[in-house]
Length: 528
Image 1 (cartoon, rainbow, N blue to C red):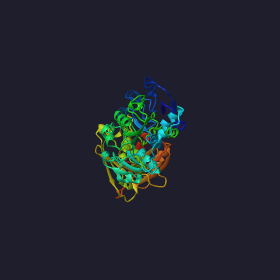
Image 2: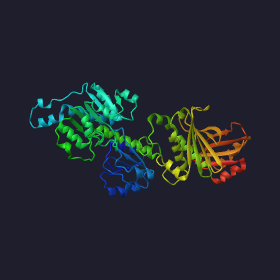
Image 3: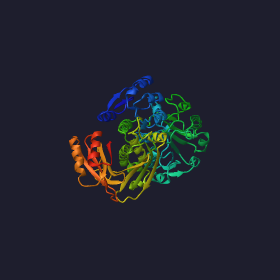
Image 4: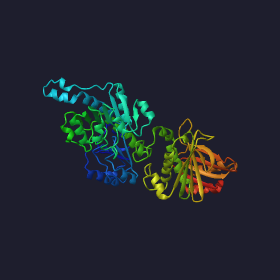
């Protein structure tokens, strides 16, 4: 496939893309019109912050499968248009967390010790030591608003300065706060008068923009220090300027702005405010990580696998993903198998998870199964973004059930579909030393087969000599059998099923001969 890299990313990221065998084009500084013109040739687009993947771009990308943003936010990607087109949008959200946390600490130290102002004075050939007396961080109280990845890293580093840590985050558990050494408060107002330093690590939402205004600054200690490396506007700029000018705020370090680039604001005029041009992620290490991570995730998307940072797919907790990930590919394979067993359109699908895996949220496995099913019957680009949407549009009802007990396997997933008057079933597991997908049940018959690309499935009366006849017919047709498994019903009703991995697809005329010679009562030629 073809990958367009529209902005500069780390050389190692480019190398990873090239080594994958895909065709990679690096075309920098494309105009919006040029991007729309070239995007129809590409399956993947990688951008940073300058290039905008607008609706026009995404709709023009008729082959587009994934858009990767080599950075944290995706403000420059039309996610809604991507959902409608079944295009995955992913980012590299952890690439800059260490850099952002260090920038936070750097600004805290800079505003407390008036480093930038002292430097400017020295450059004017002055020596005013007394003018730049600062404050220590030692034993001061730091309020951290937002205890996600970056807020947590800031807390860890602030503990090294022996600061007292308090925090506000309505989505942070008491256990998580305790691990970080942060005393958690339920209300923002409660921490306002307590802190000597404030740092915010919150997303940009209608609730967070302007959440610190005149009223909040008035409740803070006199001489408080403020830092923002998260999103512009969380501190109301005009209110902050008034508080800093009056001395209520002794100093502020601001790295982010509502509209960027920002070359003028009320803060630009204030000597006790240090401004930096959004440098939180601007380290060589962060840029390298962003390039490597986005290359990894784009390659996963092109391979049809789950992309862990996809922003238009429901996020899955890391511990859940670790448990269910081995079954994602297995369920997709089972879905492909199931769709070919069903001779009519599937109207309902039940995904049943058994064993240890059943203790987790396994809904992503239903999505994987749908992707496999639709890959056999849809000309749409079916992926983890739009599989559930396509099912809804087709009236396919999906349910998920779990049972922590299974007598035969530690983990197993069974797909049961209704197609017309027929019920079809495929069970899979990934247990075993080899860790590969195994079909362990089909149409109620128990067996154990590692499926290949072509699988011949036949039901027949279980009498001696049948396998020899099958081998003769396939041998005469020059079709090699690479492996096989025979399954029987638990109650042994006298009918058997055989699954054979063959090297080539079985032509219809050969299948007809098998029915006549062997007495096959039902059969399928499956291609995976």
